[in-house]
Amino acid sequence: VSSVTSDSDGFLQCLSENIPSGLIYTQGASNFIDVLVSSVRNPRLFSNATVRPLCIVTPVDVSHVQAAVRCGRANGVRLRVRSGGHDYEGLSYRSERPDEVFGVVDLSNLRAITVSADDERSVPTAWVDSGATLGELYYTIAKNNSEMAFPGGICPTIGVGGHFSGGGIGMMMRKFGLSIDNVLDAKLVNASGDLVDRDAMGEDHFWAIRGGGGESFGIVVSWKVSLVKVPSTVTAFNIFKTVDQGAIDVLTKWQDVAPDLPSDITIRVIIQGQRATFQSLYLGTCSDLVPTLNSSFPELGMTSADCLEMTWLQSAAFFNSWNRYTPVEALLDRKTSLRTFTKNKSDYVRRAIPREAWNNIFPWLTMSGAGMIILEPHGGFIGTIPAGATPYPHRSGVLYNIQYITFWSSGNEQGAAAMTWISSFYDCMEQYVSKNPRETYVNYRDLDIGENVVVNDVSTFDSGRVWGEKYFAGNFQRLAAVKAVVDPTDYFRNEQSIPPQQSTA
Ligand code: FDA
Image (cartoon, rainbow, N blue to C red; front, side, top):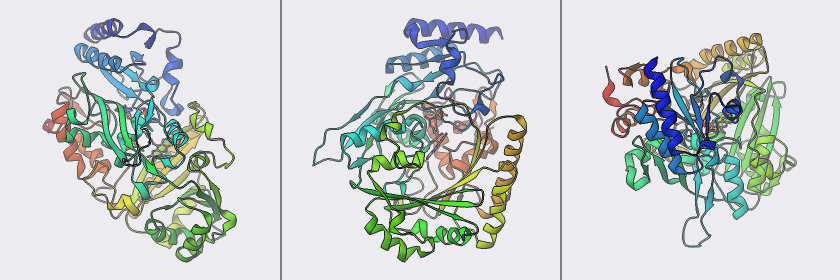
């Protein structure tokens, strides 16, 4: 205990010598808890029992990030890095290990977005800092030029840092790929505290940070992305079908149709209770969309009355709120609340689930503790990218991703029912989803699939492989090899960080 204490003191002393005191919040500070919960959105991950950081550092300059790493290394104190705080297991600000002493580097003040000047001859790009939210990124790009956009997730309060570290799936991935497929360069503070760009870190390291999961490879402070071109009018719709209205037939057909549609049409499905919502973004106008869907997917019964035409930026606000009148400024709202407890899991489907099986699956959505599932179609451009091009391996042959979500508002009883529901439902789904490995999406982090074991102060390769091959399939090995080169002593680690390869024991 004494060595931990003296390390902690040395760490805090070092921070105070290198970072303005107003940017360091220690446990005794009156606003420590406010800063800690500022981007936490899941009370399951924040209780009196939560293992808290020694301090939170909120850099306003990259040199403060570098100082935190150097002070941490010199004093044997690890860091957890937080951008938007949306990690489904809270690993950016809490530890599962009661004796872990760590500091949090919260990047929310580092959120500049610089869009390159329009130039007919070159692809438009932007530099975005990790502490920006997706909503800020979308808003800034589209306000600069309403025909420019960026492919990524739906919830606008997600942080760029964590989102890009894990992939970034969303409504335009069938056309433009994941967020990480559009990253051109990055600036990262490595395990020595040096600031390196793509050239300086090298191609293997740059490969690993684009989807290999947060934390493992250093602190990414900024990303250079290429922007994508969208039409001035896009079309969105929500079509609701209950089981009585034939939801199961439509869904069964959707599995074959959605991954095969032209890549500028995405139809995802949200199933809650006995109702499926077919939610769509088409990069074009209603008059073009209706005939295409009527010939390829007549079972959906889509008509022009379903069309909501809007700008791409308005669609980003719409998909989050389900209200077409939501002002686009809502995308800039960074506030999160601690109202809803959640637990999430995920799967990938490579062979369509038969109709009879859906008959058995739907009753799960009405059981005690039931939440919802979201099906995100793949195919299109995302399916043409080789599985090894980035760490995200769920490419060719994937029909769709399933996200399981359960939520509750209070009380242990509700929580117990919800947690039992999600794990039993996940067990039941095993027969229908991808196998060997059963694939899972790292940005829908799930500690149930395994946690690292630390031996001689290094996470073991074998323990990492258990969960790592589910997230990264054949790419796990390469990630571990990169880790062994860029962070052999395993400084940047958490319960599911990539272990260095040589630690096989
Ligand atoms: P947070 O700050 O918690 O970080 C997540 C992980 O990355 C942690 O391990 C952290 O240490 C690490 N990390 C953070 N910043 C880093 C940095 N700068 N350098 C290195 N490591 C860093 N996903 C998706 O693909 N599509 C979607 O539509 C959605 N929708 C969605 C909705 C809601 C409500 C939630 C809560 C989550 C999603 N997600 C999602 C999942 C989301 O992409 C995932 O949780 C991201 O990792 C969140 O990034 P944050 O920066 O917010 O998280």
